[in-house]
Amino acid sequence: MSVTIDIAGLPPERIAFAPSPLAELCMALHALSQPAHHPGLTSWTTATAASLDPALADRLLEGDFMWRSSFSDIFMAFAGVPGGTGLPAATLAEELDVLDRMDDERFVTAALEHCWLALYDEGGWPSPLHDPAARARALATAAARGPRQLDFSLRLLDDPPGVRVWLRRLLEDCDEAFFAETWKRVEPAQSADARHKTGLLRRKGLPAALKEVSTALSVDEGRTTITVDKMVTGSTSATDTRIGTGVVFVPTHFGWPHLLVLHAPGWRPVVHYPLAAPEPASPPGSVELLQRRMEALAHPLRMRLCRSLARAPYTTGELARVYGISAPEVSRHLAVLKRAGLTHTIREGRYVQHQLDLAVVARIGSDLIEGLLR
Image 1 (cartoon, one colour):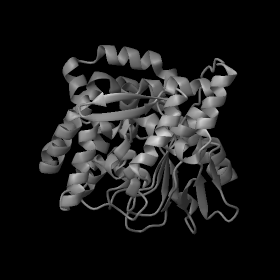
Image 2: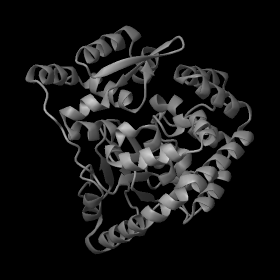
Image 3: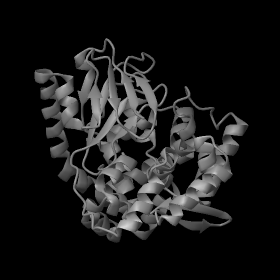
């Protein structure tokens, strides 16, 4: 499984490295909402969460599925708005201005991206603003997440301009509360890394630059395709003239272990890569328990289910829709994972949700954690 980016005929100058304050704010919000994904950021997440105004914390919960379980493409608006530079802006305010220029249909679809993951590589999604079936699906998925998410989705579908104003104000308040100071601290290292990799690209070529981005990236001998080793299958083109040609590599301080590839139809491809990869401790467990867990993970479909469950809780029905299999088959695989102690269940109203226990998986090994969350 992998994501490929077609770069055939792409001039080297159309390959860019640049930090993005809006994309980094997304990763900071994700780290706050999913601290288990980021053990190396415990001090920052603990201190920041403790200092958040309760009203701001409540507002963040309303739309947290845009950064909690998946990473909404709206945080890389520079890649989805025609007529721009195709590159991140220097400041958060400038990037929010770019986001304001995105049309409502693209904004809403990207904001509800978690509803369309199974269709990500099928040439685009039906618009929930105009398609009743798409609207019903989006609301059903949001309802399974919880009442806050359902309320936010209803507001988004019924009043996109109002939600856009609400979201910009929320992100500006995050900037004032904690992100401006955080960005001031992490931006210099990101800019330095972007300059270093740009120089490496010019001096030694694309293979050398990609090797320093991540060992999960490679390019073929003909320099026609970049391949990103991920537990998903997808493809995109850096030569699609609908949005402007090029591919952008964006560094992140908060990202590890996530290596993200924006490959939505009609968007410029973006690779969002972490600057550092800490090595979490892996205390040993019993051999019998380890064997049971490894046998549970040996099935390729269960590994794919784990990839979803590592990011957020899912119901059996949601997983069945995402992977195109029956609910009873999903239940059988979930039962194997649960017997191995790899998952737990939580109840949200009338829905029973399943989630991967990342602390348990971390004891198997950091390579598995990085592979699942990449």
